[in-house]
Length: 134
Image 1 (cartoon, rainbow, N blue to C red):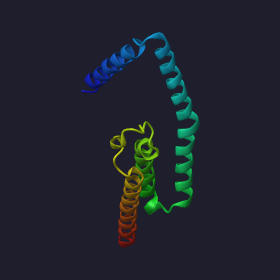
Image 2: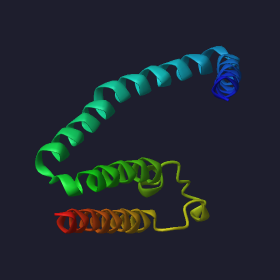
Image 3: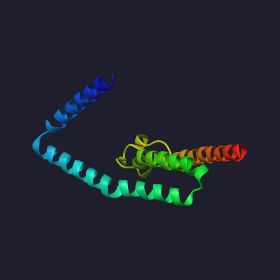
Image 4: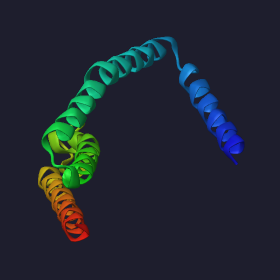
C-alpha cells in the first residue's frame, strides 16, 4: 500500500511540475521566484518560530498542559494562515462588495477562542487524571 501511495504521489507531483514548467517564459520566472521566496521564508521564518514555540512551551508550560498548548498553537497557526488573506482583504475589488461578504476577523477570533477553550479543557482533564492517578 505504501508503494502504491508513493507512486500515486510521485505521479501527481510530476503532473504538477509539468503544468508548472509548461507556463510561458515570464510567468515561469515569476513562479520560480515565488518558489524561492517561499522556500527561504519557510526555512528562515516559519521553522525558527515553530522551534521557538516548542522550546518555550517545553520550558514554561507544565507537563499536563504541554500537549494541549502545543496542539492549540499548531491549530491556531494553521487557522491564521488560511484566514489571514480574507481578514486583510487581499484581492478585494472595490466595485464588488460581495467578494468578501463576511466579517472574517471576527470569525477568526471566534475560532481561536474555541481552540483555546478546547485546549484548556483538555489540559484540565489531563491534570485531573494525573491528580487522581496519584
